[in-house]
Length: 171
Image (cartoon, rainbow, N blue to C red; front, side):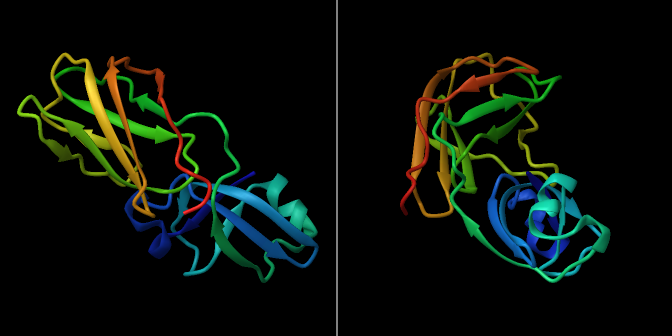
């Protein structure tokens, strides 16, 4: 059950991973935002066929909807996915399986200070000059200010590393 959200609310990838309760003529469905819908107007979503069929007759094509962001119904820990091609000299990390939208991604430097990595439009946090050979320590924060800190993370291009935590259900 997935959706693409309109460009204004996509916010440069910041909406990726958010869960939305979408309501339509036939009922409601929970979807996860995984992409941007460039042709959609503010408030619009492009739902997967499976999700759309839960709220309306697919023959209708477009229907009036309403939606709200909700915590994702996830119990497992957060995961860090390293984009293929990542190395100690260039790293792109995508945070997956998170209950609440990720607002901030930081990495602990050799100086003992955290530095924030920028999020790019395709929903990866990128260190264009790399992070060194590791192991790495990450700190992620959700839109409610909750944080998870994970140490001893080994860079594994094209693979996920399981976090030690998950954002709380209640904020």
